[in-house]
Amino acid sequence: MPFTLGYGTNGFTDHPLEVTLDVLESEGYGAVALTLGFPHLDPFAEGWRESVDTLRARLDARRDGAGMRVVVETGTRFLLDPYRKHRPTLVDDEATTRLRFMERAVEIAAALDAECVSFFSGVLPAGASEADGWARLRDRLPGLVAHARSHGVRLSLEPEPGMLVETVADALRLRDEIGGPPELGVTVDVGHCLVVEPDGVVGALHAAGPHLANVQLDDMPPTHHEHRPFGEGEIDLPLVLATLADVGYTGVAAVELPRHSYDAPGLAHRSMTALHTAWTDRDSKRDTLEAP
Image (cartoon, rainbow, N blue to C red; front, side, top):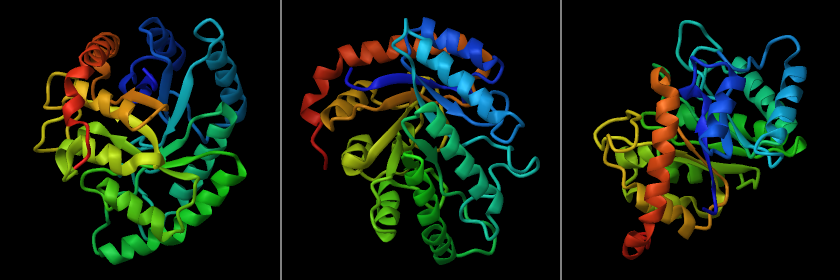
């Protein structure tokens, strides 16, 4: 495959990080999507930099010295506020803690030589209008982009169902409105495409095009946002992989199952099997690859 298969640590919350990496390496994954926060890497802990340097050395030594690629994910649920999931976000009136977290994520990504820092806009708080949310994003993102640029790191904005930036079109609009910085890419979660993208997975991946910096792989029903193992939703996995190859994607494509830690090793194994089967079957999808 021209891209590298990975797995998200938010699907291994009952395993220590080093054991998680052992399992993923043994299953043939060449990358890890590292969610900062509990239980694997606290970005605000004393001695965080030493912990990150140690992790970098361990990642570099894996796969017989070939190393594992890494994407930094920022979707931990209660790191910033123990009572409010994901709060504060970039569209909240007060977002100082979120901005500090994002800046630290960039610094960690630089130390790990990560592919990117993936992030989302957030759900609008009560009483805020869409115009308020867009204004806050336009005001805050340039500073984050500048911080990323100064550290040689790429940011990647993930559209999420129910959030202000919900579709790839929304992400590209925001990118354009702040001047189209090359340091800001787009993350596509293929399951989300079934729920919110008008042109489905193929259309979303083609629309993201040269700005595609990160991919998350999962199955999902078309009716609501629920990450499921492959085969338990309606994703066309051979079509997904064929489209990624068709658009020339060479980054990390990581399995994203944040509610399935209870069967993490089994799912890591079955997901890899499903992905290799889908890659073998991708040629059957050639006639459907052209974007709408």
